[in-house]
Length: 142
Image (tube, rainbow, N blue to C red):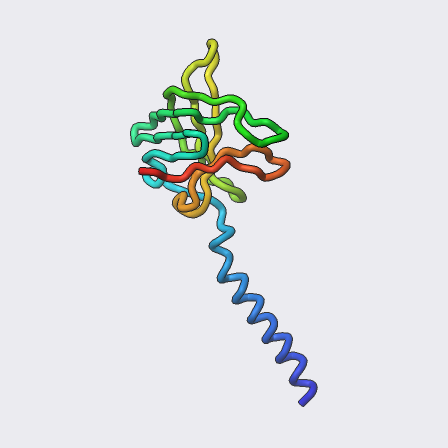
């Protein structure tokens, strides 16, 4: 009986761990989306708003383009228009959206948004610091 108890307890633990892994794997799913999932307005703190249109144009209001390393608050913003393009989903990590924004002092501004969750259900975000995994989130508002 004892010979059978150890393998059965190991099998039971494997089933419990496997069930826990399956139930929370969607929570950690890499961000991905189709262009139709992204069309609309996305809002964030301090009045930030990005409106992605079907034709590939974008309207931006107070979109952060630089952040303070100490406070993680935006230090530079962009308001204007430009274009957006959904990049191909990488094998690992979140899918990205490249924003090319209008000219500022003769040069264009680029901002990279990332998709959170499947079909962008977790919103979009700007990475503040790759080292600390800090983000500036945007949630769909329309």
